[in-house]
Length: 189
Image (tube, rainbow, N blue to C red):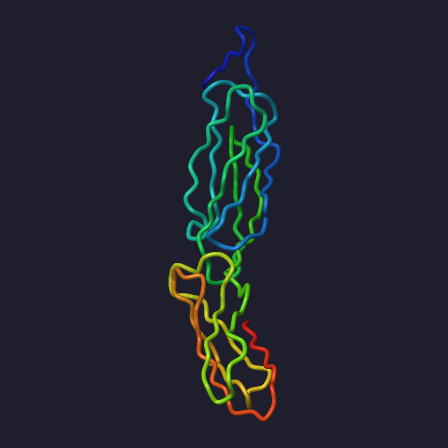
């Protein structure tokens, strides 16, 4: 049994978490969310809250967090690992036998942009690049599907795979001869 005395009189109540919020609650793996736990009252010196995650592979390990003396709110970062598919993780904060939870949705990187060199002469090849949001997953990389709005004029590989820690991947665009300027849209999914 531990008794905490505040200000020389009275026994401090056993403070418990009353809420847990995450901002943002949805993000790309490899980035961080900020968690904020609200406690039932001011805490005494040496008070800590225990943190846990329902998915140790998607969340960088969480450690106990010390709460400043007298505080009723504690904030901490929740670093995430890159994921290959959308993952919902439950983050928990526990103190004095009471637990509050919040859900964090971690998404894989998605194509943020496709860059191509414009103005290529028909019949020649050119290059394109797909840039992703966030980091690539740790084990292997995401496969990005490519398509051309006019495959008779410009062809692209059906897909490209981003390296395990890369945020972009290049690809070749083969073109055919044309009799007039033709605009082709390259799409990454």
